[in-house]
Amino acid sequence: MKKLLLILTVASLFFSCNKGVSQEDITGYASSITSDELKEMLYTYASDEFEGRETGEPGQKKAIEYIKNQYVKLGIPSVIGNGNYFQEIPLHIVKTPNVNMNVNGTLFNYFEDFISLTDGSTATFSTNEVIFAGYGIDDENYNDYKNLDVKGKIVVIKGGEPKDKDGNYLVSGTAKISKWSNGRQAISAKRNAAKENGVKALFFMDNKLFDRYSRIFKKRKEKGGSKRLSLPKQGDEIYQFLISERLGNALIENINSLTKNGLVTSSLDVDYESISVPESSENVAAIIKGTEKPDEYVIISSHLDHIGINSKGEINNGADDDGSGTVALLEIAEAFKAAANKGQGPKRSIIFLHVTGEEKGLLGSQYYTDYNPLVPLANTVVDLNIDMIGRTDPKRKSTNRNYIYLIGSDKLSTELHNISEEVNKTYTNIELDYKYNDENDPNRFYYRSDHYNFAKNNIPVIFYFNGTHADYHRPTDTPEKIEYDLLENRAKLVFYTAWELANREQRITVDKASN
Image (cartoon, rainbow, N blue to C red; front, side, top):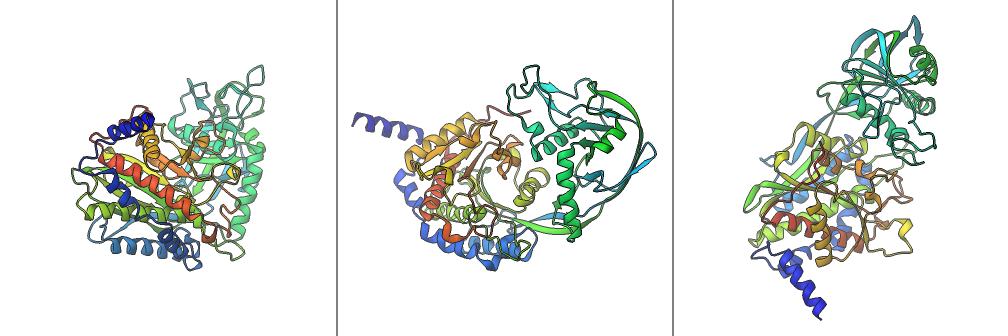
């Protein structure tokens, strides 16, 4: 009994900031989040009528209309105003560019020797010197760019990462590879490092990656091209080419055995013609204004899109990914509106943000954070991102099914992590599993959903995730496989966490900001 009284006393002190609103009131508002309503909405939202909700396609347009109509019914206004719930995202479909490449008097061919991995503007560039930057790594434990002047230059790098004499990788300090040699992550990491160092064009030689990607890109073009989408160009561009060993050796003789970074004499001429087609898509954003701190914002997000129809004509319904997050967000909005209707609305404003283009590279959330935030990022307290919370990870079938993976809660704010833990203990008692929060998680889930675009701007985040399963990105991800009792409880956890963050006297502190 003494232990119980102590727990209740701590909880009372912890939540003392919610003056005038009892825990009974809060749980009453949360009770509007029900498995029956979640199920009813999801059977519509993840139905064949929505055609897999692919970004820019008719099914995605149906999805945004459905979401908008739910907010209209609830009486929750748009962020933009004038009844406009849609934030237009000016995307464009990237086609295979026309590229002529001449190295030391020899012409090299697209698909046979190189492919373009970025959507650069039409341009011509030439040089008689390129810079060899080793593996193209920029890390605190190993840096190929140290003492190299690469700003505005043409840089050539090779795949992989270096080891010490004991066979351990210099970056990780262990026998495990890091992101710098982990397939698609290596492409992204090396491009970002080059861009941050001011490189104009990056030639990345990795024969295995090139063979794989060139075949994929060639097949896509032969079938009429894939729907590769991109945002408008912003700031300095970087051209990134994945190249064969043949082209790598033409640019830098004996590139694989070269150990010294620096200038190399090599004649290179590139004529690059960009080809793209405009495509439109939309984020959906609604808001409940704060009663005391309306200019501080708690954002709850989920992505509204999925991957559409496959080559066999089968619809990928995306019930879990991310139909579960979409309907959970709508139910959470209803709970906050119930509080507002009783005169107990949140102190801070709550934005319900449904983003598009997540499956195309987190494009909707990137547009929001990097191009056109609807409210100032400096006034954004937190992003609680929901992406797949309706199923059970098969790896956990023999353990507690009442769990959720949390990712990112401690990355930027110790306070956020502690609040999340206390809220869960007080209200929902879900097992919070941090398996994928490990910085060395090979899945890199922290970087793979929309919260990351907020986190990179030093906005604290929590990513709620049930893990992948056999139906992930398949036509079999359908509403009847959703575990609605789990979906309800997880949605309530997000509501309670958002409630606490919106009603605390002081906004949470960011004590682990990145540079």
